[in-house]
Image (tube, rainbow, N blue to C red; front, side):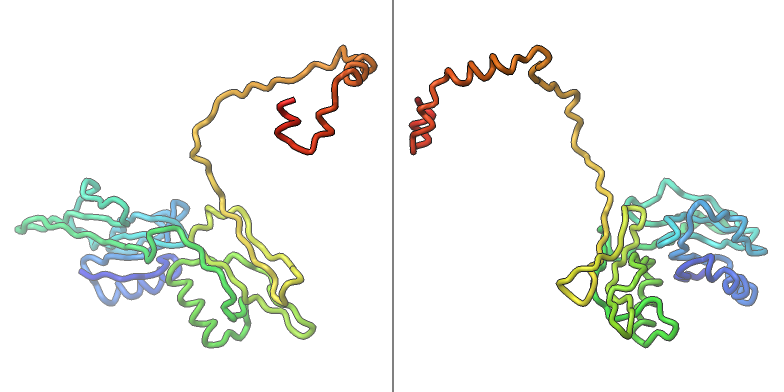
Length: 243
């Protein structure tokens, strides 16, 4: 048995198929499959193997097993570890006691996070430098998606996208973009995160108002003019209020 962090199974599927044809492992555990329900298991069939999976989404995470036929096994969902991407199999071999096999993947951060900053890496670039290559590798490895897609620093001779925002939680992003401001030669980059309120509903609200359907303007003016407004001449607020 063996384990491989494949970092996107769809992307590397053909390579994996060739690899397993040459190195015939009985069981291969896979990390970071980056699969969702839109990818059917039948599309990931490798002759001689069964594929058992548990995905997260197309941007990160996900675990699975390629089990060589005709191995006997059952999925032990009763042994799932809460708050951890994992899949447990009970392997049954002839003339041998059953044994458990679990594949686990834990992402770097347990909390939702966003990375923002001027990274001085121009994206996209037809000729990326070493630092840009490194940034692309890291973001791909961690399943990060870059949200800004227009230049953030524009001069008479250049136009670059170097102020970036990364996250893996793209489903929680309302919108993102660039705003030109006079403070700096760099544009402001922004992201709006969707916020769902957990506050309980207050129910119906009652609104009280005056009905002006029969309002007599002249009568109203007469009543106002007959009031004592001398308190308005006082320099002391408390005294005016008490009077």
